[in-house]
Length: 99
Image (cartoon, rainbow, N blue to C red):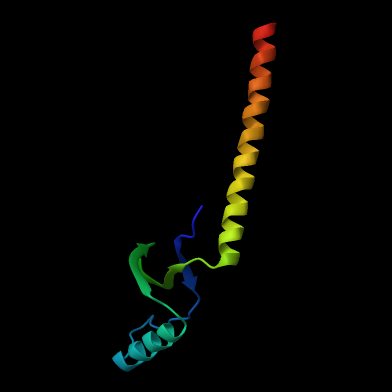
C-alpha cells in the first residue's frame, strides 16, 4: 500500500453567526492558512425553520508515516476480522451440509 492524500479537519472557532466584517473574515482566513488549512467548506441548511450555516476548515495532504501505519494497521485488522467471520461461516455451512 502507498501513502494517500487525506482530508484532516482543522478545529477553528468561527464567530460569524450574526454577520461578520470583511476584515474579520480576512483575519480568520489568514489564521487558518497559518494553521495549514487548504479548504473551507460552507454548508447552509434549516432546522425547525431556523436557518444555519456550518463552516469547517480542512487540510488536504499526504498522510504522515504514523498516519499511514495506523490506517494500514486498522485495515489489516478489519480484513483479519472479516476472514475469521468468513471461516466461521464456512465451518457452519460445512456442518450443516454434513447433517
